[in-house]
Length: 102
Image (cartoon, rainbow, N blue to C red; front, top):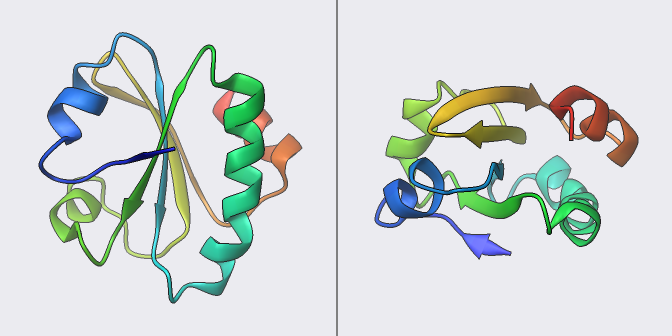
């Protein structure tokens, strides 16, 4: 899984030729840690259609602010430089597939 930072965000996300599934998280966030394996499963299943990345909000506060993230975990899909979907909370895989229309 790609580590997305302020330095590579433009290239890896905004200029990506495939949709990008982002997981905004922090190591101290219990729900974020719990969600991690679910996102890894999604990457295994949908990695041929989507790029998957993690954004540590503590290390990249400007990215969290850019998307109005006030609480974590948050997952989102960015496609062609536009926010396609945004979900706050640690949901089961099936719910994330439905909410993000994967």
